[in-house]
Picture 1 (cartoon, helix red, strand yellow):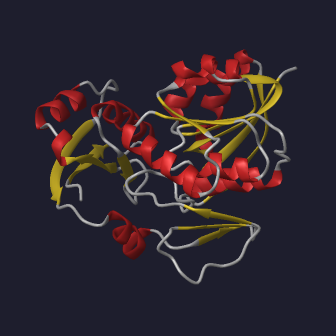
Picture 2: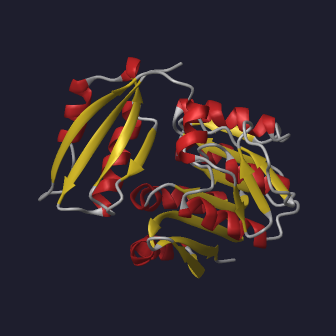
Length: 287
């Protein structure tokens, strides 16, 4: 069982953009999971394996925060190794049904509702159980699209849940990219346990996209700053006339994303909203 350090980071003044940037800075330093505070933009908790935690690296990373006028403070909590699946079951992860068509549960759950699509996810420390609004927003879109024979790229796959659902709905081939090594291993486990080992799970970032087939559907559920920074690479991977589903940001962030999207031949064809104004933005690439 793995020991972890939980780093509680407070951001003053609160800013969702600052929180996104903080997570983006910490991810390459080995932080596996990020949980935002209940108050949007006020801070987040970042988790890292105990053997990978270095206070000096944390301090140096936070010192590179690029936006002026913000104060970042943090406290550290040691979390003794435990059965993480049990922790998810007790505290976070209960079976969820999306749009009466898709049930998401873990292998340890019983009394599972019967739905057209049944997905087993053992998330460990990876993001993506379907409970977060951004994940369920994209799931709802996938349930409405005809994916039979479509090529799909899932960027920042986390647990692999979106790639798995796409494959269940007939998409092929499906590629899933994840930057975090632990999450990539978890996604590999989940695609196999759901009977879709053909999903191409890759460890890396947007630099891998030129190696993949062009997509009819491109999915990215990450955060606004990473998405806008990597959007040119996303657009190159998308076929003309293809659809892009973007989430991990709020409805008021849509103009910022569209400003980056329009020069790339991407136009909005709609968006949906859930929870605290989380959104899923649907784009189409000009033919």
